[in-house]
Length: 146
Image (cartoon, rainbow, N blue to C red; front, side, top):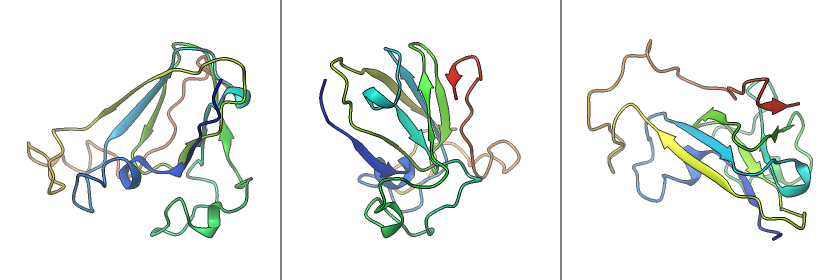
């Protein structure tokens, strides 16, 4: 296995900021491991909304994340084919894969419409009632072992 890690980030701040305006619309990410995952092979780690959060303007280099152990983190052991669905503003990371095996993941993102470079949708903005302002880790208990 490798020792590649993905540091703390939100998808809204890290992934789309390279091509979108600073205020992208909310979307969801779906993380589906193709092998069973756990702490040894660098599974997904999430900071639930009820845990202490970094300041709103934080990025992965903020002192909040300087300690190796951020309080309240959930390390998600997910079986192959299970799925973790989460909002674009949820803080998460993957620790290094320290196992002798590869960890592969299918990863997709979905929004109400195509997200354009200016931060707008290609279709009218959804009403606040149809898209939650925030999100949370939506993990089926049968898929995620806590």
